[in-house]
Length: 432
Image (cartoon, rainbow, N blue to C red):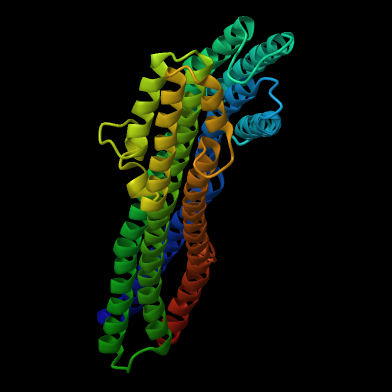
């Protein structure tokens, strides 16, 4: 009799414990999956676009000064009128691009420090444009300005503008880029921590639920001398399937986003950095002519070119390996072709043949600097766009992998919670 009275009590206890484990697993796994989905969203829709915007801003600012240099060097030469018009259009477009990037930053949920930096860049950019306008006005005020001959007043305003760009605007754009990269790294780290928590929950709580279901099944089989309970067998199968599937899904989307970062986003950001460096280096060719052969620009070009060609001492670390590693030999060969033209232009300038040097710089024939640089830039832009597409594909794959997983644990474990009383109720009815 004592054994008979203890049996339903023990059965209820085991069934209740199993149901509690299922409810806890339901809540914990649902919260983890929702959190991972949110981390994927933050990476793909906020952190990665912010990092890309910061890289694009740095590129736009770098090219602004290069175009101003071309405008000033063309002067009022009829032969270079086309180059001057092209440079004016490119200067306008890069200005719009920088403005758009800054507005995007201010409206994208960036932190207070990043927003303050973006506002400082906007203020500095307004001053830069003012100095450029003064330089162009001073040049226009002179009756005749042959190619390569920049009037002293115009040169003074231009020097103020380029100093402002390199001593304030570009460093602050670099700071924005570091902040954005830090946020991106933080989002990946938080997602990894949440994934580890999810796998731990799936293994420990899922294992405990599975063990409890098996124990309940075995205990009932022995105690009541019945065959396996269909409801509890189904619950056990679902209890095994869910933690296993959840672990596989978490690891799969982690690999997909990690692959997207390593083979898509990180190379994309590094290439955007190298592309901006290439534009700034190319501008040094023109600055050398504008400044009447100031050796600083020769040395500055050499240093930037070393980074582009893979100097291991180059900073930043993300761009180490240079063009050969990040963009391939085609882009590296095209930069070498531009560097050859750069050296020829500097030789012409040093020989006092400034007009020829300007024509070599702004010409659009093969072997001219503008042609060879455009050829180089096309190769880098093509590879950069390919890396961006790689990341977009990886992001879409991770989002697809996680689709439905904020609801699926609840659905499956609700069925398990329904099957447990369904399986034990017939046995309890025997004691009424």
